[in-house]
Image (cartoon, rainbow, N blue to C red; front, side, top):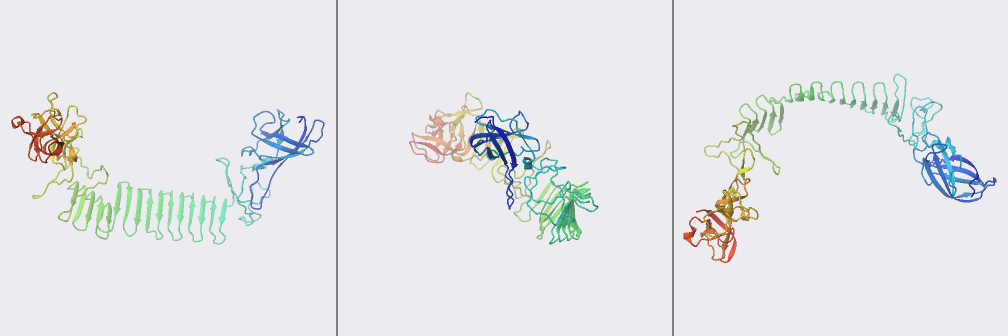
Length: 543
């Protein structure tokens, strides 16, 4: 097709208003005529036309483009819906001028000049003279005669003749007003709403309040009052507020006998009841203070019906607690730092308990150079202390274990061992002649350097362990412990003396008593059949 065609266009907006507020299509109904170079109208089908919208009459990049295919032209007239294949961006018609350009393929250039888009396409976005207000969708459509702003009705304080249609308002910028109302009368309000049936109403922008609401039972509240940030009141007289002149938060009951302050002038938290009990938290001179007219008194006092009670911060005690008549204790009195008493014969003066996997039931610390963390004194026929479970004593500076009392049956000490790897519990050790202070695995029979047995075989712990965390292995030097024994040559019977053997780390029955002098490890407490090697219980008695 010759690109030199005559062209004229008619532009209009497609607007469809459905009975139930259907969405207005965001498309432009575009009509035009095409003629050849001789002015004759064209009839036929155009395979491809490209439509573009620009911000300038010439040059620049397209703000929007789409291709329309198989366009039917009859006697020069054609019609397309712009935006049907490529939607218009929401910001396209923002009030700035726009130009439409058309290209008919296979032409390489757009037709000239570009067509200015005016008036009707800009109904895609409405513009109010004083405030920019978006009107993509609406909740209430109100009558507007000729004023700069839409008026409520013809002649009423409120709007009795509103056309009620769903309304949605969206602000375009952070500073734009979404709804703006002004009333210049003395007692007027910017915006008022009322329920006609029960006369529950509320308003925004009153003379005294930012927002105020009131229902038929006279329960009311407001935001932005002259005296309070937030205030609420019930018809019975119960009220409260936030951000008052005297309190951060205040609440009262109907008869005004019960009230409290949060962030009061002189108190952090204050509560009062005319019946007597009251208290405050964070006073000028008191961290926590409480009072009860029961006659017992205390900084903080609590009592239940069975007689269990206690108080915090009295004249005599830092903390005092009592159950019925005989069980009581106190913390920080004039006599003791901590005092506890149990009434029954087996009662506890104090009970400390921790549920944590590694927590402390009690932690006692004396910071003085000669201080004692715990001092215990027993009765004439009792004990100063009963400890149930393992007891560990640690070094003052290192914190490592220097003594542990457990449920085992042997006495063990910690030793460093030459080549300590792969040494299992039950192994027989001797004094290492090449490394003073260290031990080594036994390798010859009747060795007078025999020292002991590595403790812990078959899970049997030590009753006493010295230096267990400071050395390579705990070595049983006395008591009962499981030991590696070799009965390859002869069986072992309970009571047999044991000495070192040729098997590394194993003991055997001592049969040559002349050689056994000074090489005895201990006595067997179990039988081991001839030809077997294994672990049996041994009473360690070095000699």
